[in-house]
Image 1 (tube, helix red, strand yellow):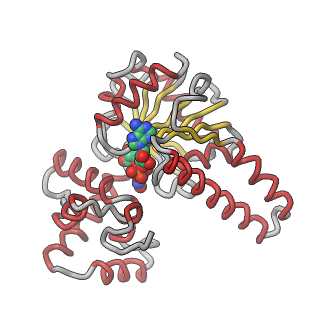
Image 2: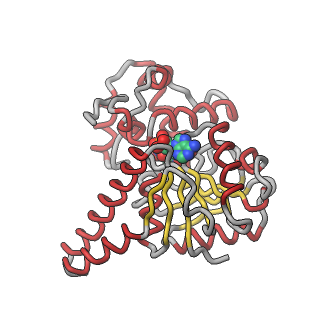
Length: 291
Ligand SMILES: NC(=O)c1ccc[n+]([C@@H]2O[C@H](COP(=O)([O-])OP(=O)(O)OC[C@H]3O[C@@H](n4cnc5c(N)ncnc54)[C@H](O)[C@@H]3O)[C@@H](O)[C@H]2O)c1
């Protein structure tokens, strides 16, 4: 199936940029959140990213400023923000990007099942939850699939396309094609804990979290060491703050439950999450962000 129009549900850390990726590939996209304030934040994020990308092309003299202005208008004009389900009646592909809580996701999938056309594929950007459990709440489990972007979605090329128990081969193929249509590199995954990337990433950062807690080292020192070494663009604590500590903690707990203590859950991170300090999105996590 070719996708002509898409929708993104949840305009948070991931949703705004996902909508921008789709719009800059030339497709119309609806961006929904529960409150206009969050929709506006998602749209602002899409505008910032578009400006940055087109500004870069102008700097390199690939396009003129007039072309950039025109393209920006066109890209942002393809994103329709909403707090309701207007505009979902003719979508072909939906990406759910609401918080990592099964109950919230299941409720959204039920609503999506009711408001989208029968042929539409319903996907989840979940980092660790079961696609099959979300699919169960719909009348079309064969058309439910995982579609896992990485942060920041406008930059990272990979998408994990995750096959649930009932996902049809036709849906998998359409999702793999759609990922390429929006200029990403898909890989197929089964519904294994952490899929591919988070399982590898967490096996490494787990040890760093453990050492920090055991030795009580300053997170800034560790982050500086990692980024100075060139092993990664930033250290694991600053990265966790950007990703959202609630999401990072949930993935860590899921891997720990699945594979045992070699995947460490940091009590310090748990403490921060329980206090509502989720990183950049709330202004405080391991760092102060001054939002
Ligand atoms: N943050 C990351 O780095 C990252 C990377 C890959 C995947 N993910 C996954 O993407 C999903 C979203 O993560 P996030 O970091 O963007 O979360 P977030 O908390 O930043 O944003 C979630 C948004 O969903 C909105 N929302 C809540 N209930 C809703 C509903 N019923 N309908 C519409 N909108 C609703 C919230 O208002 C919020 O704006 C999660 O499943 C997460 O695991 C996150």
